[in-house]
Image (tube, rainbow, N blue to C red; front, side, top):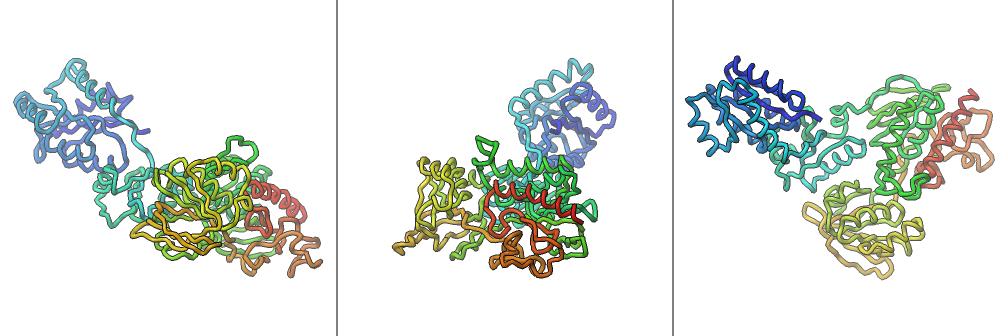
Length: 553
């Protein structure tokens, strides 16, 4: 954490050196002493400090400076740091002006020049001012700050991207947060630049795409080597498990993730049936721990980065990334999971990100405190979301298309939902319309049995209504079923024949695709047991099969 700043300004170089020397000697271990030889130059530096969110404890400024007096400087500086203490350095002839400044300009104190010895004439006053400042000081946030409107889809996408990539950040609502308005004014940007992302070094980007944020934060998107033993595509539970076990077993392993580690599971607020965690853990925590574990074993992780194509060149599998670079490997594991399925409802696309969310980030709960939230879906992900949002919302209503929760939800979760007073479950129900001016305000619900509808007020609509595989980039490479799931193992030889073009003198391994050396694990696999636990198991199993494959080359 950066030390709070003591700022001293004086146009006399001898005085400036002396006061800077005395302040550093007494306070240098706890504060950073910064000096400037004019008010104008100091103000620009103060602005940069504010952009970097560094705290200022005290301004100690000479009153008699050309072009800008000490009082004039303080009046401008406190616009950036209204809580900083303010003191004037004055000559005997300026005493009356200093006293007037205390009454008029809210200056906290004045000090006479010369102040020798400082132990008697300087440090006592400064100690009191710093003690008063420390009494009300709260450490500032050190990290990325995002300024925007509450209902901005772009702002929500940025916050989700930062959160899922484990980047500490602070959300500042321009409509309600004075700090947001002050920071926006400090940057000199206008409302048209929102959402604005301000970085720790004071630089900022206006409405940036995720790729620009990733570059600014130096997130790893370039591979260190041109060739690997194993490349894993997708950092959901299956991909993370494969990266951990592959690297631990000595394979030179690269993991490539399109968005952020964790996949769909990374959005889960609480996974309670995962082995070894009796109190449960969030999907984000699981992903964070797995990433740390994979890196500890030496796995290299690219995120965000996307694989666009793959081709087979003899014993090598060659991947083309979104930036045009190519990476080769001996074995390839596809663990891309499944993407959320969009539902076709009037008004939904227009309000997506403005009260309507697919697999909503947990941070949205704070924006809907004491509100009415509706959740579409009846599987575990929807149930976990309902339990989490019920801690904040006044009422949570689950809209389930089927006749019961038992058909698609774990029993422990169904029991929790039934025991939670502010969760209501509407069975045989679907959303048929979403309305609102700039954010979700009402939704229309249809009872699928009676075909009757009702329109209700809704602060937010969260959708957990199924998913589809994203495997078009593998078209023509590996066999897929009609829905796009990748076929593997015994399902490839169900008719008693090996896949067309199969070159190995054996049947495909259990998790091997129609191309030898290309494997699949997790939810993207045809007829897999969907879920976090099975994904982790398949990721680990795939590494064992990959060892068998590599041993046969």
